[in-house]
Length: 296
Image (cartoon, rainbow, N blue to C red):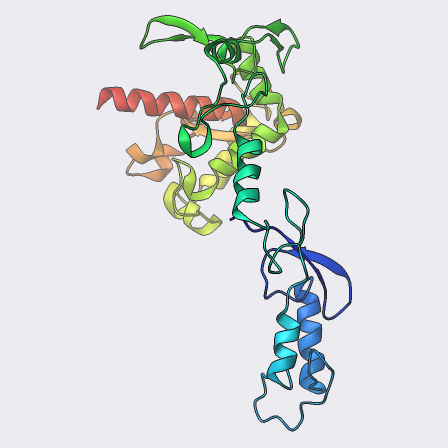
């Protein structure tokens, strides 16, 4: 049976809190550390408060087995279905029939109309009460686009069956709105950034620092990059985005990859460097990788 949070009182500060684990008696780590500090200075039974100075073991917490049992006794609980007291503290249901009835009423409901589904649960696990409800639930439902707020019906072409089917997971009305929503949605940007951060990124090179960057791209890399940015006026040569619009210094891209040069000074010639914004730099790098794969 699924466990549920148990209402407790912190043994240090006296505040009420909930936790699923039976052995937890403190509401936070700070309370646990404070209580342990006090116990080391003045050891006492956690249940009755008697002194434990006569006890030899330093980690002992109770003066007797009776106090230990009283401290670990759980508070009385009620059945989640009928509300009657359970036979033992910590139990969620008073009987097996209440448990089965709770699962039946909470899970065996039609996803479309909410009626009781016959033969659900362990007997079949049906999601709909009839074929009409299944068809109606899977039919595409009009919804507003999250980008332009135009009402549309989410559908897509299934390449396997060669048919147009419902796509209820769709949030945008077109590929253009999808791209704009991805670019302007800060939560999605953060999610994508976390997915490609560090070693998860295909261009990961082991965590480069200022020292080993100069070893990889030559000792004159920082000077050459600064000269390239100054030559281009700190503006992206592709889209014209400024440093302020980019949110940081312009990226400096090698027209011919620096991996193909044995002499790093030749790779860092100004004629081989261009200033790009973060977005254009990513697109250029992606196109170069695709061309390299096709050539291979």
